[in-house]
Amino acid sequence: MPRVVAAETLDGLAENDPAAMRSRRDLQRVHRMMGTRAMVTQALRRMSTARTTHSPLRILELGAGDGSLMLGVARALKGACPRVELMLLDRQALVGCATVAHYADLGWTAVSQVMDVFVWAASDEAPQPGRSASACWDVIVSNLFLHHFENPPLASLLVAIESRTEHFFACEPRRAPLALVGSHLIGAIGANSVTRQDAVLSVHAGFRDQEISALWPARKAAWTLNEYSAGLFSHCFRAERIEIDGATPP
Image (tube, rainbow, N blue to C red; front, side, top):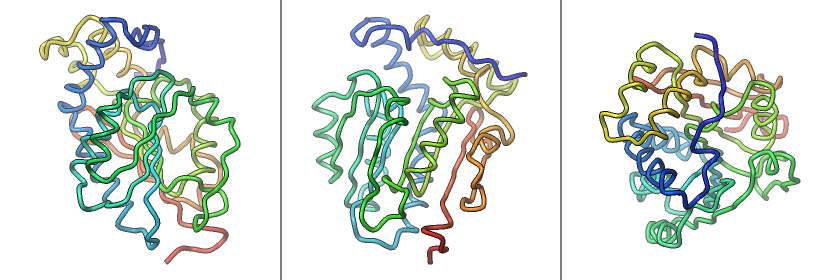
């Protein structure tokens, strides 16, 4: 199964299009079915445990959508990460005030940023005090997002991510026969036509083996990379910086 990236229907619909709104609700069920929240929770728990600073944990989610997935993660991590500053970046304004308030109830300060990810990649972000010279974020996360891009632009995006964080975690569709069968059966959970079509396209554009690692920037010696299959349908990638300003952190 060669990797084939095609434009997904949801990406071309307006924010308030009824079919798009229904499809975003479908995606919440898809995440539950795939166990995405548990995978992200486990990765963030591991990354936050390794921290030695008492400053707030700064997290950026790329392609955050309506922010509901990370909100589920925040609830699962309640108490484990008491001070979190979260930016939810998406090219559409989908994060509601109620969602931001739910984050606040958990002690997370959430901010929505409406921006195309490649505009973000080209922006000039300054590193924060107490972090490595290149890092702006403790953790950058993406969920069902990287597979939207062909390899050349994806490699460019990974360069921006590598230069701005200490940790990166991505959960993507697995490009495999079982996942493809599952994508054709997604109508069984009541998904609409947009979700049904996009699910199949997502699997064809998904990842396997070490494909994301191969696109990671050349300074691989400064990172621990871990790419693996998870659950029945997911493919995960985790990158952790092991070199900060030329020294290995404790």
